[in-house]
Image 1 (tube, rainbow, N blue to C red):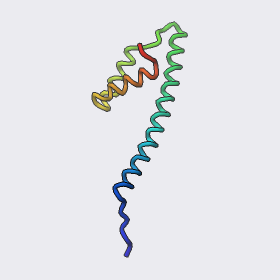
Image 2 (image 1 turned 90 degrees about the horizontal axis):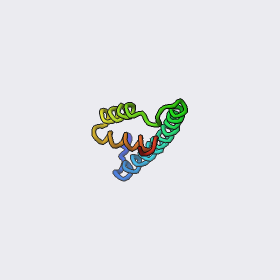
Image 3 (image 1 turned 60 degrees about the vertical axis):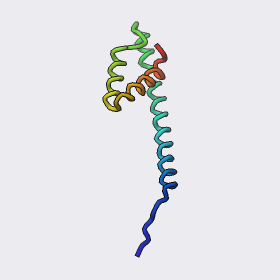
Image 4 (image 1 turned 135 degrees about the horizontal axis):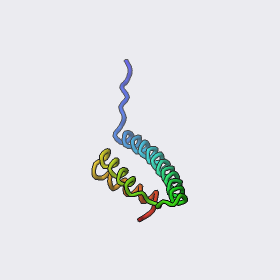
Length: 88
């Protein structure tokens, strides 16, 4: 007969928080990568005579986040856009 292993609530919470921290590290890394790629797009657009910001593209991004995450997705997308292109 084997003893059933039970995890305490404290351990479950500690494990979940560790996983959240790992996910946050990945998210931050992805945001930093997005910022770098966005910088390339902006520099290329400006160098070719275009504008730094493409508002129709930003509207697509806002819609995509809103569709995937609901109303808070719009706020998240706005924050990402601000991080990646600065305030307009």
